[in-house]
Image 1 (cartoon, rainbow, N blue to C red):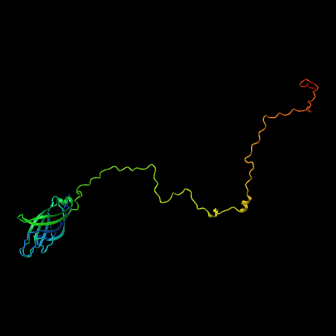
Image 2 (cartoon, helix red, strand yellow):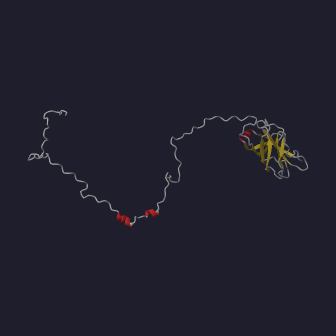
Image 3 (cartoon, one colour):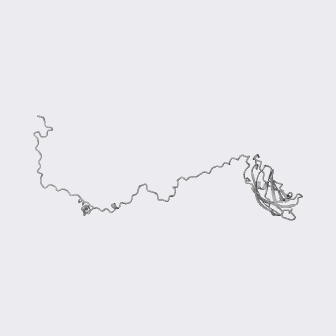
Length: 254
């Protein structure tokens, strides 16, 4: 007879403070070396996980005996100040009450700080004897996040790096050659093949050069200079006759 109900609803009125209201994933992998409560047939174990007022149970592993396997995941809502789970293993019976196999406590300090815990937790009977172990894989996604009741701190101020610029800007590399400031045109084949008419070429003659070009300097005059010859006879020139008043100048008026 089943003593634990199936998953119950979680109270949604819980306030968020620290881990309060955060999600915790618990996967029940299986059990090992369980105490056997059956004398004739194999026992049918199942596992119950309790956290506060929230309780979950796995399916019954029929004929699971001492090494049942479950692989079932449950999600709990964390409560501030409550950092352990209770695990209880039972043997399911049809006509009588279910048999208690063992129980244990699972500490959450590791998973809340590291975000992951994969451990086999020991089980004990009511008299404190060893009753086997249960393996759980626990995940806590917010392990490295700050508490939600604290305002995030402002980012630390850092001086922005100083960008250094070159005194002469470097032109960006280009795959094309630098263009000339003047447009270039392909040579005109018609102009390249132009030849002057033959009659014009024949009519033009350059002026002949003097045979004594460059000009020769004039011969220098003989030195010393020659004196002019004296006249051999008297000059035919005769002076004018004297006036009527010789020796008086100016002449008296009339």
